[in-house]
Structures are given as structure tokens and as C-alpha cells.
Length: 83
Image 1 (spheres, rainbow, N blue to C red):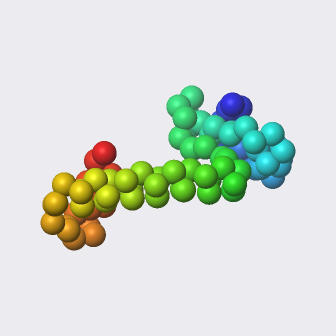
Image 2: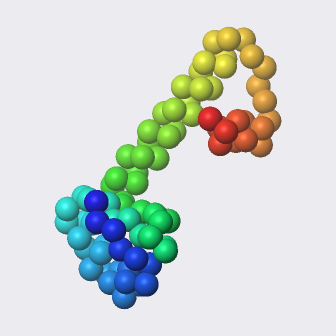
């Protein structure tokens, strides 16, 4: 994984994105030496989203199998964020 200070990333964003697409290696953007963000390819992001969706559905199925009552969406989102 390549790291770029935020200041440099601003100037090199186009080439960073091209490198990420070409190599499928994420690029970490740092601020004051601390990781702040990651640039990943769109396909990698889609895979991550699919994994998150699958984990969410597994939790829903588990709750339903335990006979738990449905909960409001905002409460479910709070619980997922805490997990």
C-alpha cells in the first residue's frame, strides 16, 4: 500500500487513481502522518459493499431465527454501527 500526504495527494490525484486502477493496490492518504482515507478501485468498493450487505442480512436472519421482534430502521442502523 502506498501512502501519500494529503498535500501531495491533491496535486497527484489523477495519477494516484490511475495507479490504483492499474495495480488494484489501495492508496492511503495521510494527514500529519496519520492515515485518514483510502482510495480504492470501484470494483473493490463494490466487493466491500456486497460483503457489508451480506453481513447485514446474516444479522437480520439471525434475529429472525431467534424469534426477535422487528426493530425500527434507525435502531437497527445504530446497532450495526456499534457492531
